[in-house]
Image 1 (tube, helix red, strand yellow):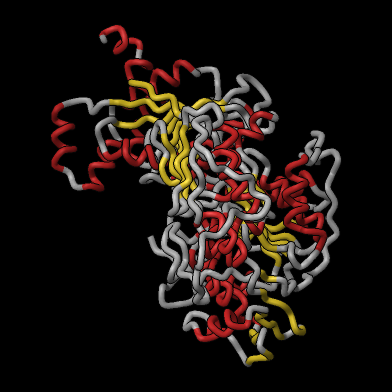
Image 2 (cartoon, helix red, strand yellow):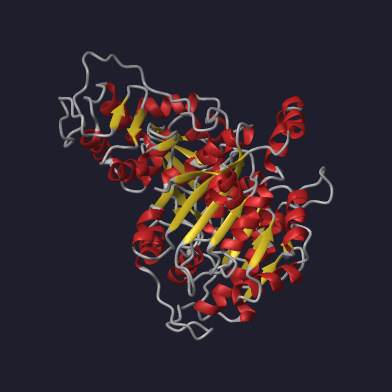
Length: 604
Protein backbone atom coordinates (compact mmCIF):
# COMPACT_ATOMS: atom_id res chain seq x y z
CA UNK A 1 0.00 0.00 0.00
CA UNK A 2 1.25 3.42 -0.88
CA UNK A 3 0.55 6.69 0.89
CA UNK A 4 2.09 10.16 1.00
CA UNK A 5 5.64 10.44 2.30
CA UNK A 6 5.64 9.75 6.00
CA UNK A 7 2.11 8.27 6.04
CA UNK A 8 1.99 4.59 5.16
CA UNK A 9 -1.12 2.62 5.93
CA UNK A 10 -2.20 3.61 9.43
CA UNK A 11 1.26 4.45 10.73
CA UNK A 12 1.77 7.76 12.45
CA UNK A 13 3.31 10.55 10.36
CA UNK A 14 6.81 11.80 10.99
CA UNK A 15 6.53 14.54 13.61
CA UNK A 16 8.72 17.59 13.97
CA UNK A 17 8.96 18.30 17.67
CA UNK A 18 10.98 21.09 19.29
CA UNK A 19 13.75 19.63 21.48
CA UNK A 20 12.87 19.44 25.16
CA UNK A 21 14.01 17.82 28.37
CA UNK A 22 11.55 15.65 30.24
CA UNK A 23 12.42 16.00 33.91
CA UNK A 24 9.68 13.84 35.39
CA UNK A 25 6.63 11.85 34.29
CA UNK A 26 3.76 14.18 33.44
CA UNK A 27 0.57 13.99 35.49
CA UNK A 28 -2.65 12.73 33.98
CA UNK A 29 -4.53 15.16 31.76
CA UNK A 30 -6.51 17.71 33.80
CA UNK A 31 -10.01 16.53 34.57
CA UNK A 32 -9.27 12.86 33.88
CA UNK A 33 -10.25 10.52 36.72
CA UNK A 34 -7.39 8.70 38.39
CA UNK A 35 -6.94 4.98 37.87
CA UNK A 36 -4.33 3.94 40.41
CA UNK A 37 -5.43 0.41 41.24
CA UNK A 38 -6.13 -2.81 39.38
CA UNK A 39 -9.80 -3.18 38.38
CA UNK A 40 -10.48 -6.72 37.05
CA UNK A 41 -14.02 -5.78 35.97
CA UNK A 42 -12.79 -3.46 33.22
CA UNK A 43 -12.11 -4.59 29.61
CA UNK A 44 -9.15 -2.36 28.53
CA UNK A 45 -5.42 -2.96 28.82
CA UNK A 46 -3.78 0.30 27.70
CA UNK A 47 -0.16 -0.08 26.59
CA UNK A 48 2.63 2.47 26.27
CA UNK A 49 2.78 2.13 22.46
CA UNK A 50 -0.80 3.50 22.25
CA UNK A 51 -2.32 0.11 21.57
CA UNK A 52 -5.36 -0.93 23.60
CA UNK A 53 -6.34 -4.56 24.18
CA UNK A 54 -10.08 -5.05 24.68
CA UNK A 55 -11.67 -8.14 26.25
CA UNK A 56 -14.65 -9.18 24.12
CA UNK A 57 -16.24 -11.38 26.77
CA UNK A 58 -16.25 -8.62 29.38
CA UNK A 59 -19.74 -7.39 30.44
CA UNK A 60 -18.62 -3.79 29.77
CA UNK A 61 -17.34 -4.62 26.27
CA UNK A 62 -20.18 -3.04 24.27
CA UNK A 63 -20.15 0.31 26.05
CA UNK A 64 -16.33 0.38 26.08
CA UNK A 65 -16.14 -0.40 22.34
CA UNK A 66 -18.55 2.43 21.53
CA UNK A 67 -16.56 4.80 23.76
CA UNK A 68 -13.17 4.07 22.16
CA UNK A 69 -14.38 4.03 18.55
CA UNK A 70 -14.28 7.85 17.98
CA UNK A 71 -10.52 8.07 18.61
CA UNK A 72 -8.99 4.64 17.90
CA UNK A 73 -8.73 2.22 14.97
CA UNK A 74 -9.39 -1.51 15.21
CA UNK A 75 -6.30 -3.47 14.10
CA UNK A 76 -7.08 -7.08 15.05
CA UNK A 77 -10.31 -8.83 16.02
CA UNK A 78 -9.85 -12.49 16.94
CA UNK A 79 -12.43 -14.14 19.15
CA UNK A 80 -11.52 -12.98 22.64
CA UNK A 81 -9.12 -10.00 22.57
CA UNK A 82 -9.41 -7.11 20.11
CA UNK A 83 -6.53 -4.69 19.48
CA UNK A 84 -7.13 -0.99 18.88
CA UNK A 85 -4.51 1.59 17.92
CA UNK A 86 -4.68 5.24 18.95
CA UNK A 87 -2.96 6.79 15.91
CA UNK A 88 -2.15 10.42 15.24
CA UNK A 89 -4.78 10.54 12.49
CA UNK A 90 -7.48 8.97 14.66
CA UNK A 91 -6.77 11.56 17.38
CA UNK A 92 -6.84 14.44 14.89
CA UNK A 93 -10.17 13.24 13.50
CA UNK A 94 -11.48 13.09 17.05
CA UNK A 95 -10.16 16.59 17.76
CA UNK A 96 -11.81 17.94 14.61
CA UNK A 97 -15.09 16.36 15.75
CA UNK A 98 -14.85 18.17 19.10
CA UNK A 99 -13.15 15.61 21.37
CA UNK A 100 -10.61 16.98 23.82
CA UNK A 101 -7.52 15.16 25.05
CA UNK A 102 -9.08 15.10 28.52
CA UNK A 103 -12.16 13.30 27.19
CA UNK A 104 -10.01 10.72 25.38
CA UNK A 105 -7.94 10.01 28.48
CA UNK A 106 -11.09 9.88 30.62
CA UNK A 107 -12.46 7.06 28.45
CA UNK A 108 -9.23 5.09 28.83
CA UNK A 109 -9.21 5.69 32.60
CA UNK A 110 -12.83 4.62 32.94
CA UNK A 111 -12.38 1.23 31.27
CA UNK A 112 -8.75 0.25 31.99
CA UNK A 113 -7.82 -2.75 34.17
CA UNK A 114 -4.37 -1.43 35.05
CA UNK A 115 -3.06 2.07 35.65
CA UNK A 116 -2.49 3.80 32.30
CA UNK A 117 1.21 4.07 31.38
CA UNK A 118 2.52 7.45 32.47
CA UNK A 119 3.43 8.55 28.95
CA UNK A 120 -0.07 8.09 27.52
CA UNK A 121 -1.96 11.16 28.88
CA UNK A 122 0.87 13.51 27.90
CA UNK A 123 1.35 11.83 24.52
CA UNK A 124 -2.36 12.12 23.72
CA UNK A 125 -2.53 15.72 24.93
CA UNK A 126 0.45 16.74 22.79
CA UNK A 127 -0.86 14.95 19.69
CA UNK A 128 -4.35 16.42 19.97
CA UNK A 129 -2.83 19.85 20.54
CA UNK A 130 -0.98 19.65 17.22
CA UNK A 131 -4.28 19.90 15.34
CA UNK A 132 -4.84 23.60 14.77
CA UNK A 133 -1.44 24.84 16.01
CA UNK A 134 -0.88 25.79 12.38
CA UNK A 135 -3.66 27.66 10.59
CA UNK A 136 -4.39 28.78 7.06
CA UNK A 137 -6.06 32.20 6.99
CA UNK A 138 -7.02 34.64 4.26
CA UNK A 139 -5.28 37.98 3.68
CA UNK A 140 -7.34 39.07 0.67
CA UNK A 141 -9.10 37.57 -2.34
CA UNK A 142 -5.84 36.46 -3.92
CA UNK A 143 -3.58 35.70 -0.95
CA UNK A 144 -3.52 33.34 2.03
CA UNK A 145 -1.15 33.07 4.94
CA UNK A 146 0.14 30.25 7.11
CA UNK A 147 -0.03 31.30 10.76
CA UNK A 148 1.62 29.71 13.78
CA UNK A 149 2.01 31.55 17.10
CA UNK A 150 4.76 29.09 18.13
CA UNK A 151 7.71 30.92 16.54
CA UNK A 152 10.32 28.13 16.89
CA UNK A 153 7.87 25.60 15.43
CA UNK A 154 7.09 27.85 12.46
CA UNK A 155 10.80 28.38 11.85
CA UNK A 156 11.35 24.63 11.88
CA UNK A 157 8.43 24.00 9.51
CA UNK A 158 9.70 26.71 7.13
CA UNK A 159 12.99 24.83 6.84
CA UNK A 160 11.39 21.45 6.24
CA UNK A 161 11.89 20.33 2.65
CA UNK A 162 8.31 19.01 2.37
CA UNK A 163 6.82 22.33 3.49
CA UNK A 164 9.10 25.17 2.47
CA UNK A 165 8.51 24.93 -1.29
CA UNK A 166 4.87 25.97 -0.75
CA UNK A 167 5.63 29.01 1.41
CA UNK A 168 6.01 32.53 0.03
CA UNK A 169 7.58 35.53 1.68
CA UNK A 170 7.79 35.78 5.44
CA UNK A 171 5.29 38.34 6.76
CA UNK A 172 6.47 38.31 10.37
CA UNK A 173 7.69 35.86 13.00
CA UNK A 174 4.34 34.07 13.03
CA UNK A 175 3.21 33.93 9.37
CA UNK A 176 4.16 33.28 5.75
CA UNK A 177 2.36 34.18 2.53
CA UNK A 178 0.76 31.22 0.74
CA UNK A 179 -0.38 31.23 -2.88
CA UNK A 180 -3.98 29.90 -3.06
CA UNK A 181 -2.92 27.30 -5.65
CA UNK A 182 -0.76 25.66 -2.94
CA UNK A 183 -3.54 25.48 -0.35
CA UNK A 184 -4.17 21.75 -0.80
CA UNK A 185 -0.63 20.48 -1.30
CA UNK A 186 0.59 22.51 1.68
CA UNK A 187 -2.02 20.84 3.89
CA UNK A 188 -0.86 17.45 2.59
CA UNK A 189 2.75 18.33 3.41
CA UNK A 190 1.89 19.58 6.90
CA UNK A 191 0.04 16.41 7.87
CA UNK A 192 3.00 14.26 6.80
CA UNK A 193 5.24 16.15 9.25
CA UNK A 194 2.71 15.82 12.04
CA UNK A 195 1.03 19.24 12.17
CA UNK A 196 -2.33 19.16 10.37
CA UNK A 197 -3.40 22.67 9.49
CA UNK A 198 -6.77 24.06 10.48
CA UNK A 199 -8.02 25.68 7.30
CA UNK A 200 -10.08 28.79 8.12
CA UNK A 201 -9.29 30.65 4.90
CA UNK A 202 -12.93 30.48 3.79
CA UNK A 203 -14.48 29.60 0.47
CA UNK A 204 -15.59 30.93 -2.87
CA UNK A 205 -19.29 31.65 -2.35
CA UNK A 206 -20.48 29.98 -5.55
CA UNK A 207 -23.52 30.79 -7.66
CA UNK A 208 -26.85 30.99 -5.83
CA UNK A 209 -29.45 28.26 -6.28
CA UNK A 210 -32.78 28.49 -4.42
CA UNK A 211 -33.58 25.05 -3.01
CA UNK A 212 -36.01 23.93 -0.31
CA UNK A 213 -36.85 20.53 1.13
CA UNK A 214 -40.27 19.05 0.46
CA UNK A 215 -42.59 17.97 3.26
CA UNK A 216 -44.20 15.49 0.90
CA UNK A 217 -41.88 13.90 -1.64
CA UNK A 218 -42.69 14.19 -5.33
CA UNK A 219 -43.47 10.47 -5.21
CA UNK A 220 -46.30 11.26 -2.76
CA UNK A 221 -44.62 9.69 0.29
CA UNK A 222 -44.12 11.78 3.45
CA UNK A 223 -40.60 13.10 3.79
CA UNK A 224 -39.03 13.89 7.15
CA UNK A 225 -35.34 14.53 7.73
CA UNK A 226 -34.17 12.27 10.56
CA UNK A 227 -32.52 13.89 13.57
CA UNK A 228 -29.06 12.47 12.86
CA UNK A 229 -29.27 13.49 9.17
CA UNK A 230 -30.10 17.07 10.16
CA UNK A 231 -27.39 17.08 12.83
CA UNK A 232 -24.77 15.78 10.37
CA UNK A 233 -25.62 18.46 7.80
CA UNK A 234 -25.65 21.17 10.49
CA UNK A 235 -22.24 20.09 11.81
CA UNK A 236 -20.83 20.24 8.28
CA UNK A 237 -22.38 23.66 7.58
CA UNK A 238 -21.46 25.13 10.99
CA UNK A 239 -23.86 28.03 10.42
CA UNK A 240 -21.84 29.19 7.42
CA UNK A 241 -18.71 29.76 9.53
CA UNK A 242 -15.26 29.26 7.97
CA UNK A 243 -14.77 26.28 10.29
CA UNK A 244 -17.60 24.55 8.44
CA UNK A 245 -17.79 23.78 4.76
CA UNK A 246 -15.28 20.93 4.50
CA UNK A 247 -15.32 17.52 6.10
CA UNK A 248 -16.52 13.93 6.02
CA UNK A 249 -19.79 12.47 7.33
CA UNK A 250 -19.61 8.77 8.24
CA UNK A 251 -22.98 6.98 8.25
CA UNK A 252 -23.99 3.37 7.52
CA UNK A 253 -25.27 2.32 4.13
CA UNK A 254 -29.02 2.56 4.33
CA UNK A 255 -28.90 5.48 6.79
CA UNK A 256 -29.65 8.06 4.10
CA UNK A 257 -26.31 9.70 3.26
CA UNK A 258 -27.94 11.08 0.10
CA UNK A 259 -30.46 12.95 2.27
CA UNK A 260 -27.57 14.47 4.27
CA UNK A 261 -26.17 15.77 0.97
CA UNK A 262 -29.54 17.23 -0.03
CA UNK A 263 -29.96 18.91 3.38
CA UNK A 264 -26.46 20.42 3.05
CA UNK A 265 -27.45 21.77 -0.39
CA UNK A 266 -30.55 23.35 1.12
CA UNK A 267 -28.47 25.02 3.84
CA UNK A 268 -25.98 26.48 1.36
CA UNK A 269 -28.36 27.37 -1.51
CA UNK A 270 -25.54 27.03 -4.04
CA UNK A 271 -24.77 25.37 -7.38
CA UNK A 272 -23.59 21.85 -6.51
CA UNK A 273 -21.43 19.20 -8.17
CA UNK A 274 -22.01 15.63 -6.92
CA UNK A 275 -19.40 12.96 -7.70
CA UNK A 276 -20.26 9.31 -7.23
CA UNK A 277 -19.22 5.78 -8.17
CA UNK A 278 -21.38 4.64 -11.09
CA UNK A 279 -24.10 5.55 -13.56
CA UNK A 280 -26.56 3.67 -11.34
CA UNK A 281 -25.55 5.89 -8.42
CA UNK A 282 -25.86 9.01 -10.60
CA UNK A 283 -29.45 8.10 -11.46
CA UNK A 284 -30.21 7.34 -7.82
CA UNK A 285 -28.84 10.71 -6.67
CA UNK A 286 -30.76 12.57 -9.39
CA UNK A 287 -33.97 10.70 -8.53
CA UNK A 288 -33.59 11.48 -4.81
CA UNK A 289 -32.77 15.18 -5.32
CA UNK A 290 -35.81 15.73 -7.56
CA UNK A 291 -38.04 13.66 -5.26
CA UNK A 292 -37.11 15.34 -1.98
CA UNK A 293 -36.31 18.94 -2.94
CA UNK A 294 -37.94 21.70 -4.95
CA UNK A 295 -35.36 21.37 -7.73
CA UNK A 296 -36.79 20.33 -11.10
CA UNK A 297 -35.55 17.78 -13.60
CA UNK A 298 -34.23 20.63 -15.76
CA UNK A 299 -32.03 21.83 -12.89
CA UNK A 300 -30.43 18.44 -12.08
CA UNK A 301 -28.21 17.09 -14.87
CA UNK A 302 -26.15 13.94 -15.45
CA UNK A 303 -22.54 13.96 -16.60
CA UNK A 304 -21.47 10.40 -17.46
CA UNK A 305 -20.19 8.30 -20.32
CA UNK A 306 -23.78 8.16 -21.60
CA UNK A 307 -24.86 11.78 -21.17
CA UNK A 308 -22.82 14.94 -20.66
CA UNK A 309 -25.10 17.74 -19.51
CA UNK A 310 -24.20 20.45 -17.01
CA UNK A 311 -26.74 22.29 -14.86
CA UNK A 312 -27.05 24.09 -11.52
CA UNK A 313 -26.80 20.64 -9.91
CA UNK A 314 -24.67 18.18 -11.86
CA UNK A 315 -24.14 14.53 -10.86
CA UNK A 316 -21.08 12.86 -12.39
CA UNK A 317 -19.13 9.62 -12.02
CA UNK A 318 -15.54 9.30 -10.88
CA UNK A 319 -15.00 7.13 -13.96
CA UNK A 320 -15.79 9.91 -16.44
CA UNK A 321 -13.55 12.33 -14.54
CA UNK A 322 -10.60 9.94 -14.62
CA UNK A 323 -11.12 8.84 -18.24
CA UNK A 324 -8.41 9.74 -20.71
CA UNK A 325 -8.04 8.22 -24.16
CA UNK A 326 -4.25 8.39 -24.06
CA UNK A 327 -2.17 7.83 -20.92
CA UNK A 328 0.22 10.57 -22.05
CA UNK A 329 -2.57 13.16 -22.04
CA UNK A 330 -4.20 14.93 -19.13
CA UNK A 331 -7.75 14.16 -18.00
CA UNK A 332 -10.10 15.91 -20.47
CA UNK A 333 -13.11 15.99 -18.13
CA UNK A 334 -11.35 17.72 -15.22
CA UNK A 335 -12.70 20.91 -16.78
CA UNK A 336 -16.05 20.03 -15.18
CA UNK A 337 -14.72 21.47 -11.90
CA UNK A 338 -14.55 24.92 -13.53
CA UNK A 339 -17.62 24.71 -15.79
CA UNK A 340 -19.82 26.48 -13.26
CA UNK A 341 -19.31 28.54 -10.14
CA UNK A 342 -19.82 25.61 -7.78
CA UNK A 343 -20.58 26.46 -4.17
CA UNK A 344 -20.41 22.83 -3.01
CA UNK A 345 -18.77 19.62 -4.23
CA UNK A 346 -20.11 16.38 -2.77
CA UNK A 347 -17.83 13.32 -2.83
CA UNK A 348 -20.02 10.25 -2.45
CA UNK A 349 -18.28 7.06 -1.20
CA UNK A 350 -15.21 9.18 -0.42
CA UNK A 351 -13.24 6.09 0.62
CA UNK A 352 -13.18 5.17 -3.09
CA UNK A 353 -11.96 8.56 -4.35
CA UNK A 354 -9.54 7.80 -7.23
CA UNK A 355 -5.99 9.14 -6.96
CA UNK A 356 -6.34 11.58 -9.91
CA UNK A 357 -9.35 13.20 -8.21
CA UNK A 358 -7.19 13.85 -5.15
CA UNK A 359 -4.94 15.84 -7.46
CA UNK A 360 -7.69 18.05 -8.81
CA UNK A 361 -9.23 18.38 -5.34
CA UNK A 362 -5.93 19.80 -4.10
CA UNK A 363 -6.36 22.55 -6.71
CA UNK A 364 -9.92 23.54 -5.75
CA UNK A 365 -9.64 24.04 -1.99
CA UNK A 366 -11.66 27.26 -2.25
CA UNK A 367 -14.80 25.19 -2.95
CA UNK A 368 -16.78 23.71 -0.08
CA UNK A 369 -16.29 19.94 0.06
CA UNK A 370 -18.56 17.32 1.65
CA UNK A 371 -17.40 13.71 1.82
CA UNK A 372 -19.93 10.92 2.46
CA UNK A 373 -18.96 7.37 3.36
CA UNK A 374 -19.82 4.32 5.44
CA UNK A 375 -16.17 3.84 6.37
CA UNK A 376 -13.03 5.98 6.36
CA UNK A 377 -10.92 2.90 5.67
CA UNK A 378 -9.07 3.06 2.36
CA UNK A 379 -7.30 0.01 1.02
CA UNK A 380 -4.55 2.27 -0.40
CA UNK A 381 -3.82 3.88 2.98
CA UNK A 382 -4.63 7.42 1.83
CA UNK A 383 -6.80 8.37 4.80
CA UNK A 384 -4.40 11.26 5.43
CA UNK A 385 -5.21 12.71 2.00
CA UNK A 386 -8.94 12.50 2.72
CA UNK A 387 -8.30 14.41 5.96
CA UNK A 388 -6.18 17.07 4.23
CA UNK A 389 -8.08 17.59 0.99
CA UNK A 390 -11.74 16.78 1.72
CA UNK A 391 -11.63 17.57 5.41
CA UNK A 392 -11.60 15.81 8.79
CA UNK A 393 -14.34 13.52 10.02
CA UNK A 394 -17.11 15.78 11.30
CA UNK A 395 -19.84 13.30 12.21
CA UNK A 396 -20.06 9.57 12.90
CA UNK A 397 -22.80 7.37 14.33
CA UNK A 398 -22.30 3.70 15.31
CA UNK A 399 -24.36 1.36 13.15
CA UNK A 400 -25.77 -0.43 16.18
CA UNK A 401 -27.12 2.86 17.56
CA UNK A 402 -29.15 3.47 14.40
CA UNK A 403 -30.26 -0.16 14.41
CA UNK A 404 -31.52 0.19 17.99
CA UNK A 405 -33.59 3.22 16.96
CA UNK A 406 -35.02 1.41 13.95
CA UNK A 407 -33.39 3.63 11.30
CA UNK A 408 -31.56 0.66 9.77
CA UNK A 409 -32.55 -3.00 9.86
CA UNK A 410 -31.18 -5.32 12.53
CA UNK A 411 -28.74 -7.80 11.03
CA UNK A 412 -27.48 -11.28 11.81
CA UNK A 413 -24.14 -12.25 10.28
CA UNK A 414 -23.12 -15.86 9.67
CA UNK A 415 -19.90 -17.29 8.28
CA UNK A 416 -20.45 -20.70 6.70
CA UNK A 417 -17.26 -22.73 6.36
CA UNK A 418 -17.15 -25.16 3.46
CA UNK A 419 -14.55 -27.82 2.65
CA UNK A 420 -12.86 -28.27 -0.72
CA UNK A 421 -14.92 -31.00 -2.40
CA UNK A 422 -12.34 -33.54 -3.61
CA UNK A 423 -8.75 -34.65 -3.10
CA UNK A 424 -8.03 -33.49 -6.66
CA UNK A 425 -9.18 -29.97 -5.82
CA UNK A 426 -7.16 -30.02 -2.61
CA UNK A 427 -4.07 -31.04 -4.59
CA UNK A 428 -4.73 -28.27 -7.15
CA UNK A 429 -4.91 -25.82 -4.24
CA UNK A 430 -1.77 -27.21 -2.60
CA UNK A 431 0.49 -26.62 -5.63
CA UNK A 432 -1.01 -23.29 -6.76
CA UNK A 433 0.66 -19.89 -6.26
CA UNK A 434 -0.73 -17.43 -3.69
CA UNK A 435 -3.15 -15.60 -5.98
CA UNK A 436 -4.41 -18.81 -7.57
CA UNK A 437 -4.94 -20.35 -4.12
CA UNK A 438 -7.31 -17.52 -3.23
CA UNK A 439 -9.28 -17.92 -6.44
CA UNK A 440 -9.57 -21.71 -6.11
CA UNK A 441 -10.86 -21.31 -2.56
CA UNK A 442 -13.25 -18.49 -3.55
CA UNK A 443 -14.76 -20.41 -6.48
CA UNK A 444 -15.15 -23.65 -4.51
CA UNK A 445 -18.08 -25.48 -6.17
CA UNK A 446 -19.09 -26.91 -2.79
CA UNK A 447 -20.42 -23.44 -1.96
CA UNK A 448 -23.13 -23.92 -4.60
CA UNK A 449 -24.99 -26.43 -2.44
CA UNK A 450 -25.05 -23.98 0.46
CA UNK A 451 -26.38 -21.30 -1.90
CA UNK A 452 -29.09 -23.74 -3.05
CA UNK A 453 -30.18 -24.40 0.52
CA UNK A 454 -30.25 -20.71 1.44
CA UNK A 455 -32.21 -19.77 -1.70
CA UNK A 456 -34.75 -22.46 -0.82
CA UNK A 457 -34.90 -21.32 2.81
CA UNK A 458 -35.52 -17.70 1.77
CA UNK A 459 -37.47 -18.43 -1.41
CA UNK A 460 -40.16 -15.82 -0.67
CA UNK A 461 -37.74 -13.07 0.38
CA UNK A 462 -35.49 -10.71 -1.57
CA UNK A 463 -32.05 -12.26 -1.81
CA UNK A 464 -28.83 -10.94 -3.34
CA UNK A 465 -26.05 -13.38 -4.24
CA UNK A 466 -22.84 -11.36 -4.62
CA UNK A 467 -19.29 -12.31 -5.53
CA UNK A 468 -15.96 -11.40 -7.03
CA UNK A 469 -15.41 -13.92 -9.84
CA UNK A 470 -17.55 -13.83 -12.98
CA UNK A 471 -17.17 -17.53 -13.83
CA UNK A 472 -18.55 -18.42 -10.39
CA UNK A 473 -21.44 -15.97 -10.74
CA UNK A 474 -22.35 -17.20 -14.23
CA UNK A 475 -22.33 -20.77 -12.89
CA UNK A 476 -24.72 -19.84 -10.08
CA UNK A 477 -26.99 -17.71 -12.29
CA UNK A 478 -27.27 -20.54 -14.84
CA UNK A 479 -27.92 -23.25 -12.24
CA UNK A 480 -30.63 -21.33 -10.39
CA UNK A 481 -31.97 -19.48 -13.45
CA UNK A 482 -31.43 -16.07 -11.86
CA UNK A 483 -30.78 -12.71 -13.52
CA UNK A 484 -27.12 -11.62 -13.34
CA UNK A 485 -25.79 -8.06 -13.27
CA UNK A 486 -22.09 -7.49 -14.03
CA UNK A 487 -19.98 -4.59 -15.23
CA UNK A 488 -20.84 -5.49 -18.83
CA UNK A 489 -24.61 -5.37 -18.25
CA UNK A 490 -26.03 -2.38 -20.10
CA UNK A 491 -27.30 0.45 -17.92
CA UNK A 492 -30.84 0.21 -19.28
CA UNK A 493 -31.01 -3.53 -18.51
CA UNK A 494 -29.38 -2.93 -15.12
CA UNK A 495 -31.94 -0.26 -14.16
CA UNK A 496 -34.78 -2.51 -15.38
CA UNK A 497 -33.62 -5.41 -13.19
CA UNK A 498 -33.10 -3.19 -10.16
CA UNK A 499 -36.60 -1.80 -10.69
CA UNK A 500 -38.11 -5.29 -10.90
CA UNK A 501 -36.26 -6.27 -7.73
CA UNK A 502 -37.57 -3.21 -5.88
CA UNK A 503 -41.14 -4.00 -7.00
CA UNK A 504 -40.85 -7.68 -6.07
CA UNK A 505 -41.19 -8.94 -9.64
CA UNK A 506 -37.71 -10.47 -9.26
CA UNK A 507 -36.92 -11.80 -5.80
CA UNK A 508 -33.46 -13.33 -6.24
CA UNK A 509 -30.61 -11.50 -8.00
CA UNK A 510 -26.93 -12.30 -8.68
CA UNK A 511 -24.53 -9.34 -8.60
CA UNK A 512 -20.84 -8.93 -9.32
CA UNK A 513 -18.81 -6.36 -7.39
CA UNK A 514 -20.71 -3.60 -9.26
CA UNK A 515 -23.32 -4.23 -6.56
CA UNK A 516 -20.97 -3.09 -3.79
CA UNK A 517 -21.70 0.59 -4.18
CA UNK A 518 -24.59 3.03 -4.27
CA UNK A 519 -27.47 0.88 -5.40
CA UNK A 520 -30.89 1.45 -3.89
CA UNK A 521 -32.42 -1.93 -3.01
CA UNK A 522 -34.44 -1.01 0.08
CA UNK A 523 -36.24 -4.32 0.48
CA UNK A 524 -33.28 -6.69 0.06
CA UNK A 525 -32.99 -8.54 3.34
CA UNK A 526 -30.74 -11.53 2.63
CA UNK A 527 -27.25 -11.33 1.17
CA UNK A 528 -25.15 -14.37 0.31
CA UNK A 529 -21.50 -13.45 -0.26
CA UNK A 530 -19.80 -16.25 -2.20
CA UNK A 531 -16.46 -14.48 -2.71
CA UNK A 532 -14.84 -11.13 -2.01
CA UNK A 533 -11.84 -8.92 -2.61
CA UNK A 534 -8.67 -9.83 -0.70
CA UNK A 535 -9.48 -8.89 2.89
CA UNK A 536 -11.29 -5.67 1.97
CA UNK A 537 -12.93 -4.15 5.05
CA UNK A 538 -14.55 -1.41 2.97
CA UNK A 539 -16.17 -4.05 0.74
CA UNK A 540 -17.59 -5.85 3.75
CA UNK A 541 -19.09 -2.56 4.92
CA UNK A 542 -20.69 -1.86 1.55
CA UNK A 543 -22.08 -5.36 1.11
CA UNK A 544 -23.67 -5.49 4.54
CA UNK A 545 -25.08 -2.06 3.78
CA UNK A 546 -27.01 -3.46 0.82
CA UNK A 547 -29.44 -5.13 3.25
CA UNK A 548 -29.57 -2.65 6.14
CA UNK A 549 -32.15 -0.25 4.72
CA UNK A 550 -35.40 -0.36 6.71
CA UNK A 551 -37.86 -2.84 5.21
CA UNK A 552 -41.24 -1.79 3.91
CA UNK A 553 -42.53 -5.34 3.69
CA UNK A 554 -41.87 -8.87 4.85
CA UNK A 555 -39.11 -9.81 7.25
CA UNK A 556 -37.76 -6.77 9.05
CA UNK A 557 -34.43 -8.43 9.91
CA UNK A 558 -31.43 -8.67 7.58
CA UNK A 559 -29.38 -11.84 7.14
CA UNK A 560 -25.79 -11.70 5.89
CA UNK A 561 -24.12 -15.00 4.96
CA UNK A 562 -20.51 -15.18 3.84
CA UNK A 563 -19.31 -18.52 2.45
CA UNK A 564 -15.64 -19.29 3.11
CA UNK A 565 -13.49 -22.33 2.27
CA UNK A 566 -11.89 -23.69 5.42
CA UNK A 567 -8.15 -24.38 5.72
CA UNK A 568 -7.36 -21.92 2.91
CA UNK A 569 -6.11 -18.36 2.41
CA UNK A 570 -9.73 -17.25 1.95
CA UNK A 571 -10.35 -17.88 5.64
CA UNK A 572 -7.43 -15.62 6.60
CA UNK A 573 -8.68 -12.78 4.40
CA UNK A 574 -12.24 -13.27 5.73
CA UNK A 575 -10.99 -12.52 9.25
CA UNK A 576 -9.57 -9.20 8.07
CA UNK A 577 -12.78 -8.24 6.22
CA UNK A 578 -14.82 -8.95 9.31
CA UNK A 579 -12.92 -6.37 11.37
CA UNK A 580 -15.20 -3.67 10.01
CA UNK A 581 -18.30 -5.45 11.31
CA UNK A 582 -16.60 -5.88 14.68
CA UNK A 583 -15.97 -2.13 14.85
CA UNK A 584 -19.67 -1.52 14.27
CA UNK A 585 -20.81 -3.95 16.94
CA UNK A 586 -21.68 -6.96 14.79
CA UNK A 587 -20.31 -10.45 15.28
CA UNK A 588 -20.30 -13.52 13.07
CA UNK A 589 -21.92 -16.78 14.02
CA UNK A 590 -19.53 -19.44 12.72
CA UNK A 591 -21.36 -22.31 11.01
CA UNK A 592 -20.17 -25.49 9.37
CA UNK A 593 -21.74 -26.46 6.05
CA UNK A 594 -23.32 -29.40 7.91
CA UNK A 595 -25.23 -26.87 10.03
CA UNK A 596 -26.86 -25.53 6.85
CA UNK A 597 -27.23 -28.60 4.62
CA UNK A 598 -29.79 -31.14 5.90
CA UNK A 599 -28.27 -34.05 3.96
CA UNK A 600 -24.76 -33.49 5.32
CA UNK A 601 -26.12 -32.94 8.81
CA UNK A 602 -27.94 -36.27 8.69
CA UNK A 603 -24.89 -38.02 7.24
CA UNK A 604 -22.66 -36.50 9.97
